Structure formats: C-alpha cells, structure tokens
Image (cartoon, rainbow, N blue to C red; front, side, top):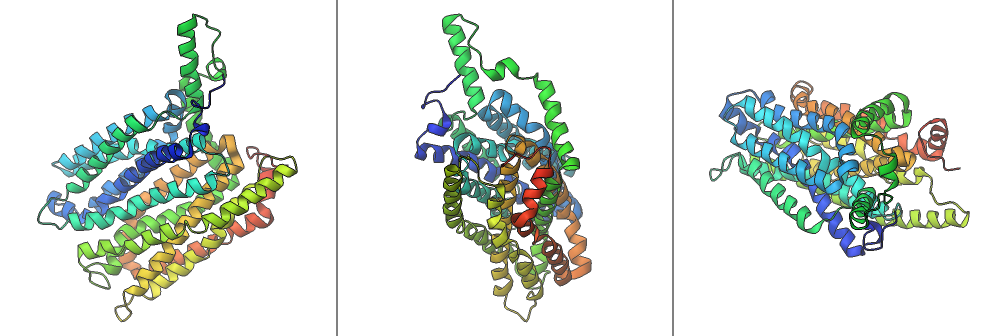
Length: 468
C-alpha cells in the first residue's frame, strides 16, 4: 500500500527530518548519559551506603550489562507497534527506575533499580538507527549517522563533568545525578509526543489500511506485512536467535565486534581511570570537580571527528553517481571504512601518549591533548564499523548490530570495576601501554578490508548482500 508524500517519512522536508532526528538522537544522548553519570559519584555512594568502591561502581556495570541484554528483545517491538510507542513506553519506565535509584535507601534497592533502568534504557539507543533508516537515504546517512553517533558518545562523557560537581557539592545531594536524568527524560518524552511522529513505514501503512477498512468495510485493504508477517512470539524468538547465530557464523561481525569491544573497554575504563591520572589520589591531584572537567578534551575529540565527514560524504556521493552510471544502485561497503582508516592509527598513538606523558614532572596539558586525539579516534572507528556492517548486511544488519551491541556492553560494563585493580596493580603507564598494544593490533583491520579482504569475506558470507 503506497504512502503519499506527506505520509512517507523519506519525503518529509529536510528541516522536519532533522527536527525528528534531533529529538530521537537526544534519546540516545540521555540513556548514554545515564549509563555513566553514577560512576562519578562513587565516593558519595560509598559514604551513604557503607560499601566498597567496587560495589559503588556496580550500578554502572549492571546498567550496561542489562542494556546489552535488552538489545536482543527491543527490535521486534518497534516492528510491531512502531518506533514511537517503544520510545515513549521504554523512556517512561526508564524514568521510573531512575527515580527509584534516587530514592533508594539501601544498596540492594539502588542496584536493582539501576539494572532495570539499563534494560529499559536500551530501546531508545538501539532503535535510533532504525529511525535514521526510516528518514534518510544511504547517501544522506553518510553525514546523518555520525551526528547521532556523536550524541550517544557525548552523553556518557559529559555526564562525569556534571556529576563531579554534583557529588561533592554542599548545596545538593548526589541523588541529583538521578534527578537531572529524570528531568531530561521527561522533557524528551514530551518532545516525542508532540513533535516526533511515527516513522516506520510498514506500521504507517498498517494504520492506513486499518482506517480504509473501517471507512469502506472492505477487508481487502491489507498490507504485505499484515498478510505475511509471522506471529509476534515467533519474531521475538527470531530476534534473539539470529544475532547469536551471527556471532558464531559471521567472521565479519565477529572481527568488527572485537574492535568495538576493545574500544569500549578502553573508553569506559576511563570513567574510574581518570581518577588515577588526574584525581586527588592520582598523578596530578585534582579535586573531584576538576577531575570531571578533564573529560572536556575527550568530548572535543568526539566533535572534531565530524570534520572528515564532509569530504567523505562528497566522495561517497561521487562513487554513487559512478555506480548509477554503470546501472548499479549501491556503493561497496568498504567505502565506509575511510573514517576508521584515518582514526584507527591515532588510537594507539593517543594511548601511548596519554600513558607515558602522565607524570607529575610533565604538564597536565599533555595528557589532556592526548585525550582529544583519543576522542577523535573512538568516534571515527565507531562510525566506520557501524556503517560498514549496515551496508554489508542491509536487511540483516539489525541482527548483526544487536549481536555487536550485546557483546560490547556486556564486556565493557564489567571493565568499569575491573579497571580499578588494573590501574592499581599495573599503574597508569603500563595499563595504558597494554590497552594501546591491543588497539594497535586492531588498527590494520580497516586497511585489510578496504584493500581486498572485505570483498573476499563478503563473498564467503551467507548473509552479506551481493554487490556484483
């Protein structure tokens, strides 16, 4: 059943599409913010609940692990009821558990609420990729997706800057980290309700067919989705089975998942790790609030990673025109790896730089500048990996990305706690050297795939889209 231009999300005005994209991207920002904000008030949680530092960080770890598990079941719901009901309902429940964490009077209640907040915070971040596909063409997604990805990275690393001022403040309690998240969530729900209509075309078509059946009394008005779609329970089991199957049968997914796991382990290990570099008991001895400000350079790096998007977009557009002249409608996925080819080698360099200039005899500006390069590297690698998987698998991309999300959050969540003994026993310099070596091993991957391995691996895959 065809949609009119007014009903078709891809035909909406450019300004309106960006408005909807911005609102949905803000959902990713808020839940990503929530994942990290509690890690920086660990000293206050230790004091209130009388627990050790590892237990105080367990709220962040559990949030991230349940977030990863939630990715397995979030996709089918948006395919049945649409994107917006999933955003709204999950954000409301997420807000309620965030409120519960703020009101908790014991550590057990706090950890339970943080776990469920992670579970219900998952759909807004994992489904914004679907909304992007609903609204934008593949060429347009070359510059739209990086902007949304940037929001999801800014969230967890702007949060420490705020939390490190809230935690030690004599004016407010540490629970204001939860109240700020709750305020953001409420504003976001209102924004989606009033300004972001449904974007998933099959659901819009189903609504239109249902309306026509009511008006005409003719049951022939049905969409292909209504005629051929399997029961919801079947789709739910399929959404759990296929991503796990991908992890065991698709080397492409495994390799890029491993790259992102290493990326996230380093990234979220910095939440407590920066205390060892810049904190009161660390190398530079900054107070809690000033340690939070040390995340600013990393966020600057995230934003600088958007600069290469413009030449990459022009190159992709030119390649698309060349393919269309040959009678094709696709550009090979390896074109998406350019960002990682620029950013990948910068990652180990930034970690070695950060590790071996973090001495009291060396100005703190040196590790801060290294953090800029680190943020640039992380964003560039993430953008490339995600877009490469999306273009490689197309209709199966959601399953591949769910498997990757599951692995990277379940691996990086425990790293928040594991980083404590690692930084304590190995020290800042050798911990960052170890992480730098791991990232150096993965840096050649985008080059190998771009210069031949990618095309060969796609031909061997049973699920990859053909570009012949």
